[in-house]
Image (cartoon, rainbow, N blue to C red; front, top):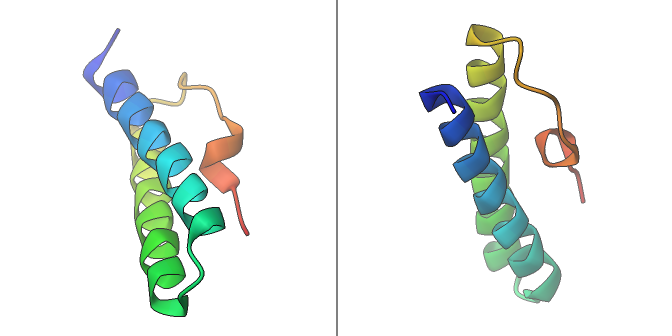
Length: 65
């Protein structure tokens, strides 16, 4: 597996973890922090996919609450 694919896998894992946190959190600033982490990971995935178009899209790439 290429470095880009490994990085995308890591970002998607972080997104899944923070989606669970987002759903669990009740305090607005905690939800905002989780969402910001998700958005940053999605931006990184987008950049990596631009460099390597063969990386398949996944639901994590465009998840929104």
